[in-house]
Image (cartoon, rainbow, N blue to C red; front, side):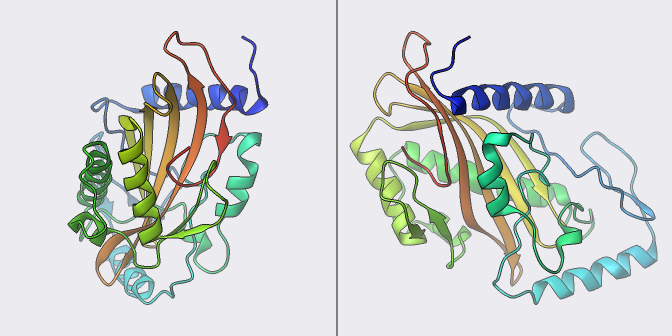
Length: 270
């Protein structure tokens, strides 16, 4: 196959690896593939949807309680798990995004460790975060998203995201981000079709919801493949999304042929 742009080839390879990894790892529904880190946690076996056992010592429980108490006091200077630490495939074309999201500073050793299954359970967190993401996308599709919609309470007041092309490059606040999505939906035939969700929860009070999707209608008659990451952190007992990142693929026309090169950048839109 001939690719019109190096990013197109990289994205095609990325999507194939993503699909193969999802197929091999998932025994649940086609729309949810909850994943956990494979890094060993001393003296414990973390349970998973696959039914593995759960054995956590009293010492581990005490350490976890201390860790959660400490993490609740973390400053607003955030430490984001990198794409690689979230078990996504590593591609040279994603170097810039990986570098911008790499772990730094204190707590970095915790980024690849999954959260304890007790109080609250990992599965309960996953269910909640995926519900937030699904609801947000459905509101955009239905042209029902508003600046003061209750779903916006699930976003951090200090939310920020970089605007993708073709908008002027810069950093968006939450109000600007919401306004751009409302405008995009109102002025185009935009619709985001979720193909799969893959959620990771970490001991340091962070989580990432991977959304594999097809975006249709921008421009009319085209389909664009997208992998988006909604990054959450827990503050004052609540999980809130503090940024969204995307890997944007090439357009496909109605006849299935690629039309134009892909791009890489955070945020929704084209």
